[in-house]
Structures are given as structure tokens and as C-alpha cells.
Image (cartoon, helix red, strand yellow):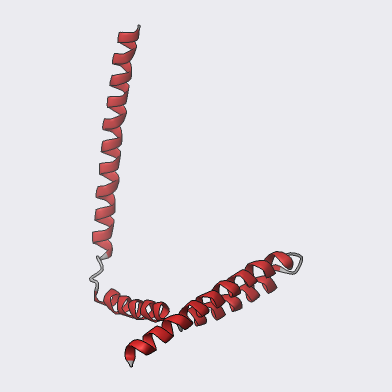
Length: 122
């Protein structure tokens, strides 16, 4: 019974995705067709059509899986131990110093190799 419902759902999923593409296409077409209208009205219309497209996409099995993933990701982000301001500043300074040192080394090697090449070529 569940396999039949899944098969039926996947058949409607392709129709829903086609509807999402049609809504996005209508937003793009409307934006170019009404280019003379004020920008605010066009942005509001595009945002409304995007909301409709997202609402339709979330009704598909892939959209539901994405929503579940997004909710799980949000709970995982809350578990992250973020560095303190001092740790962030120290790490940033270390990265800047290393980049400057490596840049100077590469500049020196480039100058040396260029000097050697000019000696050989004459």
C-alpha cells in the first residue's frame, strides 16, 4: 500500500515541479514584460511568485526531505561551540602574518629566479 502511495506521489511530484518551473518562468517573463513599471512593484510580484513556487516545491517529496534537512541543520548549528572574540582575533592575526611571510618568500624567489634567468639569457 505504501509503495503504491509513493509511486502516486512521485507521479504528482513531477507535475508539481513543472508547476514550479512555470511559476518561475512567469516571474521572469513578467519582470521583462513590465519593465516600465516601478521597481518596487516588480520586486513585490517576484517575491510573491517565489513564495508560491517555494510553497509548491515543499509539497514534493524532495522538498519535504530538504525541509527536514534544514530543520536538522538548524538544531546542529545550536550545538556548535563558537570561538570567543579573542580566539578569533588571534587566529586572524596568525593567518595574516603567515600570508605576509609566504608572500615575501614567493616575491624573493621570483626576484631571484628572474635575476638568474636574466644572467643566463644575457
